[in-house]
Picture 1 (cartoon, rainbow, N blue to C red):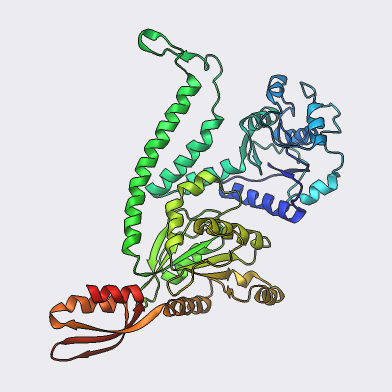
Picture 2 (picture 1 turned 30 degrees about the horizontal axis):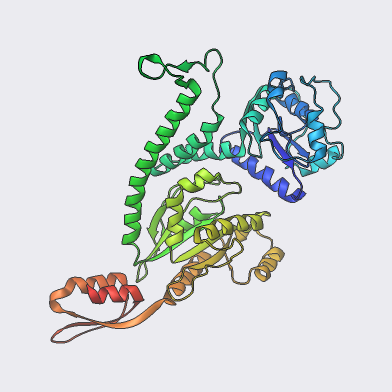
Amino acid sequence: MIVGVRLPGLDAAEHRSSLEELARLATTLGLDVVGCVVQKRSALARAAVIGAGKLRDLAAWTGGSGVIPSAAKKKVTKAGAHAASDADEDADAALPETLEADAALPEDDEPDTAPEEDEADGPGFPTVPPRGVVATMVLVDHELSPSQARNLERATGGEVLDRTAVILAIFHRHARTREARLQVEIARLGYLTPRLREGVGGGGDRVRGGVGGKGAGESALELDRRKIRDRIAELREELAAIERDSGTRRKRRADQATVALVGYTNAGKSSLMRALTGSEVYVADKLFATLDTTVRPLQPESRPRVLVSDTVGFIKQLPHDLVASFRSTLEEAEEAHLLLHVVDASDPAFRAQLAVTQQVLAEMRGASPDAQTPAETGPDAQRLLLVLNKMDRVAVAARAALTVEFPDAFAMSARDPADVARLRVRIIETFEERMEEATLFFPYAEGRRVAEAHAEARVLEETYDERGTHLRVRAPRDVIARLRRS
C-alpha cells in the first residue's frame, strides 16, 4: 500500500508524480502495489501521518484494526512533533486515548478535503480493497519518526517503511562492489540508530558497570547504539582506504579528457554509457540499477583519448547519509571536464527531476542551486551539456516545444546509433575548444616520449631530421606542458 499526504505548497500533479515514483521504487524492490491512500492536510498527523478516518481506510487493506493503542497514543506529545496548524493540532488533540474503529472523528478526517479530491491526487491505484486482497506492507511517501512508524504498524498490522527506508533497501540490494556495500551499510546503520528501542521483557535492564560492579552501567539500548557507532567508525575507516585508492586513480586521469554522465535515476545514463563506450555495463529499466562508478574510453577512440564515467543517479529526497557516503562517486562528476546532464524527456516530471540534479551539482560546486552552468570560466573550466534522452518516446509536437524551451540542449535517443554518433562528435568538439596547437621535438633516443605524444595528443604532422622527431600536435595546455617536461 502507498500512503501519501498532500501538504500546502504541493500541487496535485507534483504530489501524484511523487506517489508514482514511490510505486516505481516499490516495483524495483520486488513489491506489487495494490492500492493507495492519500489525504490532503495542512501538516502530517503527529501520531500516524494520516487522520483517523484514513487510518481506518488503510487498515481495511491490511486487515488491521485501524486503532492506535492507548499506551502508544499517550506517548505522542507536542514536543518534537511536526509543525501543524491550529486546526490540525486541535483535531489530533481531540482524539480519544483509544481509537475505536467506529468512532466518528470528522475533525481528524480533514472535512475540508472531499473524497474525490483525495482520489484525484493519487497515482491511479484502487482506493477500495477488492475482495480477498490483503496488503502486508505499507510504504509512506514521507520521512517517519520512530513513533509514527510504530503507530502505523500497530494500527495496520503490516510492515511500514518510509521513503528513506525504501531507497536504502534498494541500494542494499543493488550494491555490487565493496565500496558501494560499505557506503550503503554506513547509511543504513545511521538510519537504524535512532530507531532502536528497548526490547520487551528485560530489554531495559542495565549492564553492570565499573570495577566491582558499581555504577549505573549501560542499558541494553545504549549498548546496542554504542556497538553501531563503533561499527560505523570501522566501516568509515575501511571506506576511507578504498576512497584513497579511487582518488589516486582519478589523479592519474587528471590530464586526460573526462566526461561524467549525471542525472536522475533511470534517465538512461547506463544505456548512453554502453552506446558511447561499447562496454557491457548493467542496464535495466529500474530505479538505481547503477550504484558503482564505471570508467571506460569513448569508442571509437579519439586522440587524445576521452574517458566516460557513469555515476549513481539522483532522486528527490535522497537520504543525506547516502549523499555523504557516495561522496567519492560524486567526485567523479565534480572533477570531470565535461558533464552530460541526462534527463528522461519522456517523463512528465522531468523538469522537477532536472531541478533536483541541478541542486545536487550546485551543492558540489558550492554555487547557487539555480545555476545552469559552472561558475568557472576559461579553457579548462568544467562544461555542462544538457542531454534530452528518450526523445523517441516524445510526440512530434512536444519535441518542437522542448527545442524552444531548451535551445542549448542536445536532443537524442540512446537507442539511435545516429544520435549517439552525433553526441560523440559534440563531445570531441567540446574538448577541441580547450586544445592548443604546439610543435614538440624529441631526440631519437627518446622514442618513448614520441609514443606518449601519440597516445595523449592528436598528431597533426610528424617529420624527421638528423637530430630527432618533430611533432605538430593538438592537445590541452596541461598535456602539452607535461610532454615538454617529460
